[in-house]
Length: 153
Length: 472
Image (cartoon, rainbow over all chains, first blue to last red):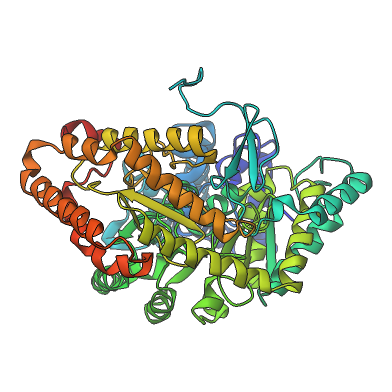
């Protein structure tokens, strides 16, 4: 009989990304993904970096900005059912440490990918487009905004 | 009349309530508290409770999930489920908490609940806690429920994507605690099946009273219990114990064990009360004739009140164990006036006839404040003579305190026509009574129609306490 929450935090989605060791784990997993891609023989270094960037941004977008609600039976009476994970973090308070971390990591990754791909146009386009997909929903102006009714209900 | 420090008319209860209750040293015939089958006086229940105390102590010391579950809880849950031929039961330690926790555990923000406008206070608290949109439909009007369901269906057609994410529920009671009326459960069940709405029925009053064997309104109206998503009940009314329960299919009730807040975060029912609940259910199962007995007395009380009382009307159902007596002219009198007049009647019945009557009290947050009335609660152990004596006491007191004059003099000026009609019909009634001294109660019923308080428009009756002051 699993019941989550307690100590006034009924939704674990609010704080688990800011919990102890989470950022380090996040960077380690990203690095592991990059190492795996580097170890594939026919992938050149620019390709590996682009793939890392694109795969990271795709997963980031799906888990933080597309999926709604939380994977537990939480006692918030359905308040988080229409919110994406990003909107749930820290109960919707903007400019918290977790939010800043999650904004900066894709930007740094983009700079690294641009450097290692020697600013080649063919690599720049997917990198930049996925970066925009990941950065724009994080703007405070986009809190609880749904464009064209996508993902509204 | 003397009143006590808290402003009430009754003193402290000094003896255990049963068929008679001792208040402030005096014994009164108890038709105020809920004890429909008279089991509060039963020695068998006392023995069962004593056995449990000797075995388990007095408390269960924990919620159900944390060392608070005792084998009598499991036994009582299984017994209730088997009694109603349903799959599983969740037992709560308080009848109010059962339905107030069950509704918000299924209905969340964004869902829609269709509720009868006269649902009881625990259900109202559950509806508020659920954070869903509540659509109240007119009391007992399944036609109005259908209109509301149709309206919702139209709204859903316009926004199909949203409609897929909202869940719809309907909450009704078997016999309504606020008015003693019976729900048209068959029509409501059919509507809920047709419009794919989950149905919750609260059978706190009707459990153990209605039906051939006491299985509730579903047995009385021959409704299949599988069509209802859960039935909530209470052991505090007919079973003379304590606690509440939610009974239904396993997949519905099992959810309560994690997300029913009154189940998870409250201490469980004391084993001694679970033991007496088990015994009460055994008595109901083994001697179904007591159900027939209590139903006969309900009908008899209803008819006696209809025949013998001149200034009160019975507004509840014939088979309801709670009889609501409204004062004649209630629809034109001010709320406070009715309350005071009824209190006068109750005080005089208390003093001169030693019968404990009560008028139900409501909080400010009550949704549809009903007009004040006397609530008489049936007890199977009452003899027919005692039922007659209750009616005779109320009639006697109404005459001795000149209730008629008080009613007539308090009618506000804008209801002159009603007042004139009432005076005319009362005088006609008195004249008829004089001429027909030998007529028995039953025949008097037909003549009663000369003294019917006239119905006035529904919207002039106050709905909330805040409206009362604007009425005067």
